[in-house]
Length: 326
Image 1 (cartoon, rainbow, N blue to C red):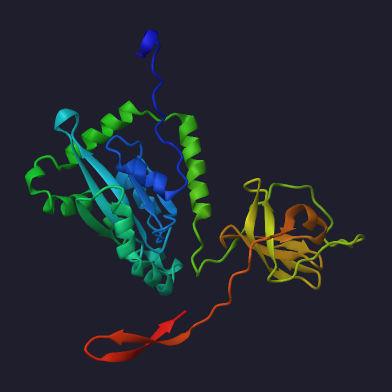
Image 2: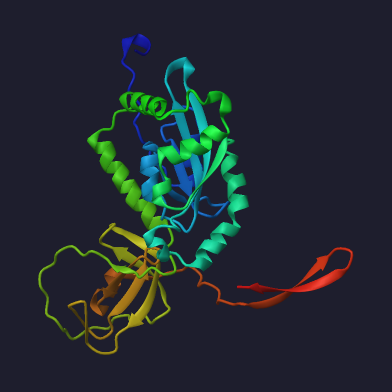
């Protein structure tokens, strides 16, 4: 009860975080409403891969969100004044799972190179008692993580049991029940986090789901002047799926003749636009371009370059070593 006899409102179970810094800060709190968070391999931006209050089982569904994810897991054992709370640093990927091919070895190597910086960035939020590496969904289990934790927590072994962990999780869920509205908001948040994550190099863009429309003539003649973007043009794309503009679109193909793609008849001048971090595409008829496309003001990406450089190394003798760059 609050002052004046008013009943205090119960905190919601899952606040919606959309950046890694906020999520990791919440996990680092002993009473935080999220108990795990994973971020992508960028120690400055800390892009959020996933997070929540469902602990290890929930985290298992997000191992493949990035080439390698790094994060923090908070585990509590028991309840009351005897409860023990442990923090685990997570280094996770799906490299040993069947769907590992969605990320190239180049992407995984680049992510792995940032591992030392990521460990320092994550542990600034809370010092972890142990580091656990996960390379497949089968390792993202209570048993696997407990095995690693017990090895470095000798004096607390009697408390670090599956039963004590489940006891603490049950008490947490009872203190913070999930409403249907909260569940729906969380599902929307998970979809948005997935949209924000960059697409793997090997990922093929998927067509956007379109709302049902009345049947239109298959091929129409354009009777008014319209703007047709050419391949390589950067554009804003209106998405019916999210009801918002996406400022990461790029035109990858423009038809010169009538054509059919996946059973859809397309007019000359129709433009294929890839967007949503390379995860989605849509065909835009030139008659609809004014409503669905806008020129983007974002600068184009610099041209890709690779080659060899000579690096000067100083020791007793000064030597030059050839290093590959891209």
